[in-house]
Length: 161
Image (cartoon, rainbow, N blue to C red; front, side, top):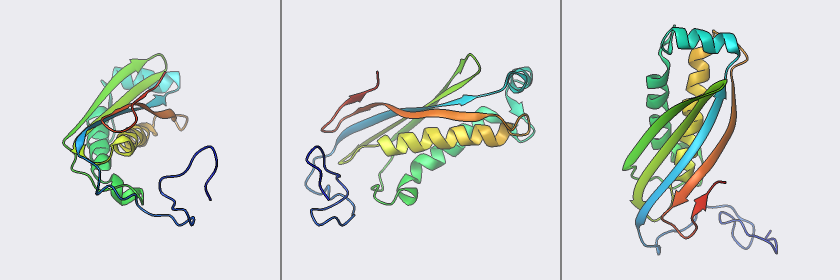
């Protein structure tokens, strides 16, 4: 099942899937930053801005941060081959953009494997929570462009362009 151009780390030479063995790797400080963008119809965005980002379900941003943090900590339960990690830092930021909201999730740990899946999961669930809390305003609220922006501390550094 190997290709000449790349190989999958979670598949062995016989094509069997499994968790990567990181026991021989050194622990280093690992960091990942991911983003998700939520877009709103103009009338929904106006209503949110007028309410101070409170919905009928409660404070939108604070609830999204709580849900995203829970998701970061549960990533290994959701994605089969992710290692359970001691999360040492998790931070969310929001930025209003024309027509929407840009959410970022930064995750840190000192371990043998990276936290990019945790950051992506956190950003995704925070964005899903925003939609859940705002769907009464419009069924057309949507998530776009969940992506990894940066990853450091391991063999490969990543910086999105």
